[in-house]
Image 1 (spheres, rainbow, N blue to C red):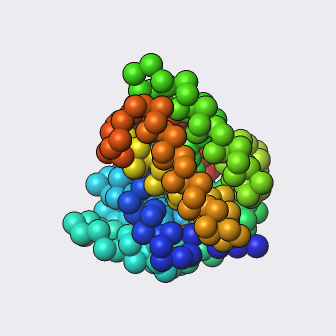
Image 2 (image 1 turned 60 degrees about the horizontal axis):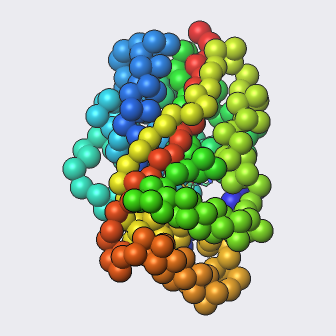
Image 3 (image 1 turned 30 degrees about the vertical axis):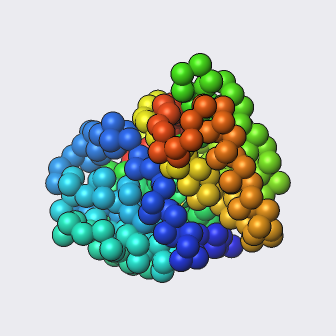
Amino acid sequence: MAYRLFEGKEHASIYQQYRFTPPSGLKDVIIQYLDKKKGQPHVLAVDLGCGTGQHTRLIAPHFKEVVGIDISDFQLEEARAVPGYANITYRKGTAEELPFEDGTVDLLTAASAAHWFDPTRFLLEADRVLKSRGCMALLGFTDGNIRLNYKDCGEKLNHIYQEVKELLRPYTSSPVAASESKLEDLYSAIPYPDKERIESFKCKSMISIRTLVGFISSWSMYNSYKRKDPQGAEDMLAKIQKRFLDEMGVTSVDTEIEREWEYFCVLASKPQ
Ligand SMILES: C[S@@+](CC[C@H](N)C(=O)[O-])C[C@H]1O[C@@H](n2cnc3c(N)ncnc32)[C@H](O)[C@@H]1O
């Protein structure tokens, strides 16, 4: 079954504005892993479920060619609109049926996307297209341990954030729950002996309240809620934004707070 929760034009535009690029330090770990397992040259990387291309652009400097694959036309349209990446092409397709010859791909990545794939079909297809000793890197973030810091009201901001998650829990699909478990089942299903997991790659950045609320509006569970109750969903966002600002004692949505959170990554290398 293909999940089609990211297809709308508006959702794609929210993605382009509010989704975060994964940490550059984690990208370095992935490239080092590829170097260790397969070595140079880095010819072709394929970023699956590329969305609007944040991760595709991050890895582009390390490869001769990078292809971003996504099932959503609108996501791809947003990705293609970003100029300056001559070695990237974006193609419509699925992770379960890839438009590459056998044994031609050096690195397969999926950022916040592998939990949406059919695991059995994806792993078979990955095995078909990867070169010998080629690698896969399936990364994502978990915000169970997220910390929001602003002066002395961090605890209250964290509390509001967790409340939103609780409120949207009934709209959480099972793939999102799989991501929250750091792709445990998918990791177990990878048939390669050479595999490892990075459980917690910590990062810290400043974000505005506008971006934080925009990020919440990009969640699939928020969009499931919005489909059911458009007005209720919009009101909820406005209320959350006001509560954040009130707790902080400020009025500008451009006020920045510190956010600490964690990424995970499943790494595996195809045997020779
Ligand atoms: C949560 S978004 C992540 C997008 C981007 N990689 C990022 O880090 O922001 C998941 C993306 O996976 C795509 N997707 C879902 N199922 C897919 C599949 N079976 N094959 C390819 N793409 C898929 C969706 O259209 C969506 O753009």
